[in-house]
Image 1 (cartoon, one colour):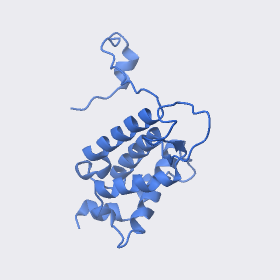
Image 2 (cartoon, rainbow, N blue to C red):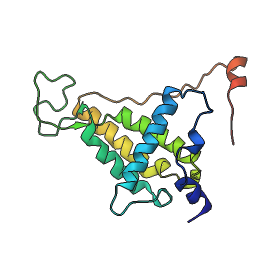
Image 3 (cartoon, rainbow, N blue to C red):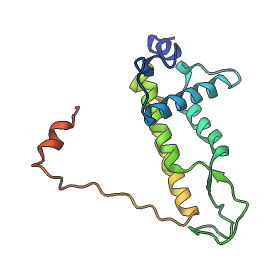
Length: 173
């Protein structure tokens, strides 16, 4: 086991623990809860998967596992309401995790992985396969619910004279 794997497998909450008397932000609380949930998911696998051995396949399985707890109706191709943003009646199509929820979850887990000793190069939450999966979920859900997804264009004419904005942002090469 590598040294980063040992750090990662060690006390999972140590590096995200707030100072005594401090309260966690909503984001930090969610991140800790998500990290603990993912760790529990790996422990419940047969055989259990150590965090140091976790890869993008485990992350994909975890995301599919979470679908059973979703609240977003995703109409199947043959459903009469396929492509309708607001169907007039209920149907038997499955509930899934919403794309936005999955995207936010991956962001929190990606950060938690590195905060808990994982190297950025080995981060399974940063895998290209995960990005492709999330893109496919977004497109599938948008099509099934009749909501066109338009990619936001990046602004090319940002204000260059705003000192507050430029002094507060950090750029890494």
